[in-house]
Amino acid sequence: MINKCKLFIFDLDGVITDTAEYHYLAWKKLTDELGYKFSIHDNERLKGVSRIHSLEIILDINNSTEKYSEQEKIRLANKKNDYYLELLKNITPKDLLPGIEDLLDKLKKYNIKTAIASASKNAFTVINYLGINDKFDYIVNANEIKNSKPAPDVFLKAAEVLEVNNQNCICIEDASAGIKAIKAAGMYAVGIGNIQNFKEADVIFSSTNELNLEKILLDFNK
Ligand code: B16
Ligand code: MG
Image (cartoon, rainbow, N blue to C red):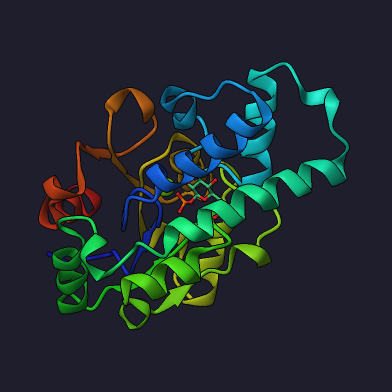
């Protein structure tokens, strides 16, 4: 089989490690302080979404969008981030999601390049705690990306830097905004999670544990 996949691009939160719980706890602490409602169900809407946009969603849920100036919103987002950074200290190499190490080993064997395309401005901190810095050919710096997911920019940046055509890229995501971004980039999308969230994905696995690279490549190359 001739393999046209030259680059495999990973989302971070929810694919490589499960930081969604920490994001939730940090937002929960902030919303409790403010006396706002925020449930684990609401948290689903924040996956793959930038920090400031996440805050705007929370304010919208509480009909409080108009209450804050842009400067006050930045202050609240920074406060949430301080809580999040504190929680990140709990991450160790054991927190790599099941199946990810195997997948990375196989990609190396097949000579397929790897990158991380995360919306998180804390991606390098998370990667450091996981001890996987040297496992990727390129890690996109979210601070350098103008339009966040569902815009395609972060995925296009990885392909551009590693000099791979978009149609030779496979990307993996756990969020609806991320799958939309991948399809907008003209790339092949692997979804992790509930089928309802990913109408546009090319293939879906219920968890990283179920990932099957051979199945993905067979479909991608057909
Ligand atoms: P930060 P991903 C995303 O990361 C998270 O899914 C999302 O919940 C978070 O709000 C966003 O990063 C920004 O994170 O506040 O750390 O910059 O899934 O794209 O890896
Ligand atoms: Mg994610």
